[in-house]
Structures are given as C-alpha cells and as structure tokens.
Length: 172
Picture 1 (cartoon, rainbow, N blue to C red):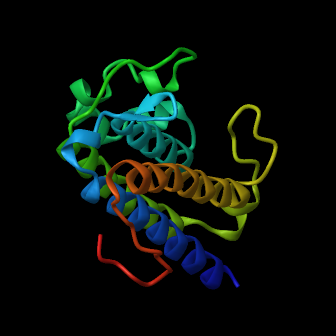
Picture 2: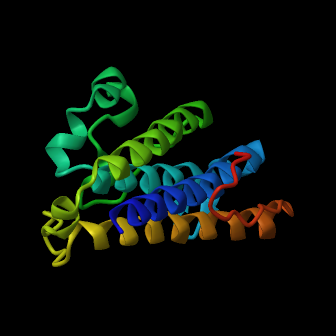
C-alpha cells in the first residue's frame, strides 16, 4: 500500500507541476507581469512554488536552509511570499522555470522518502491540524488551484490554451 500511495503522490505532483510549467512556458511576454486577480502572473507562479517547496519541507527553516535557497539569495530576498503583507516583487521567467524544476525534483525525492510513519504524523505546520499525508494532498491541490488561475488568465487575455495533464505524461 505504501508503494502505491508514494507513486500516487509522485504522479499527481508531476501532473500539477506539468500544468504549472505549461502556463509558465506558454505565457506571452506581455502577460508575464499582467494581473491574475490582484497579483502579477510571475508573483502567482512564485507563490505557488514557494508554498509547494515549503510544504515539501518539515518547516520554514528547513526550506530556507536547502542548498538551492542558499545559492539563490537574491531570488528569494526576504521571502516576501511568506510574510503577512502584500508582495511587491516580480520575477524573471528563467528564475521561475529553474525553481519549478527544483520543486518538481524535490517533490519526487520527498514522496519517495516517505514512510508509513512519516505520512501518519501531524504535518507540523501551524493552523494545519492534519497528517503529512493529507498535507501532500493539500499541496497538490494548491498547485492545481493556482495553475487553474493562470490557465484562465492565459485563455482570456492571450487566447492561449494549456493541456490537461494526467499522471505519467510529461511534455512541460
């Protein structure tokens, strides 16, 4: 059963990241910092990734201490996406693509490292009273939620379509 659950999480993370990647790849330059609801497209993309990365970690300090974060301090800055304030920064597409690939690989590695015990413990994040297994489900839903926002903006503003992605399919 554990093998099946780990495969399910890995496949659904991959599908979610493929959808997000398709949005990032297909976004016209003129739309890259155009609003998606209240925030620029690039901010929504970063928000999606930073929380995916956070919830793949055990806590905020563990996320920030990863080599990728230490190697890209100017990209993460003050981690404004994690602060209780409106974000103001916009982000270059290349940096978002790089971070997306990091998060994608991390999701695969983290899901493969899970055990029955690690999935059953409380997730460890304040205001989230559920297991680590449920945190993975919520994390995937969060990625898909924002990918859907970006998909809609691309369709409405630029007549750009993004594909439906199921598990086991990777183009983006």
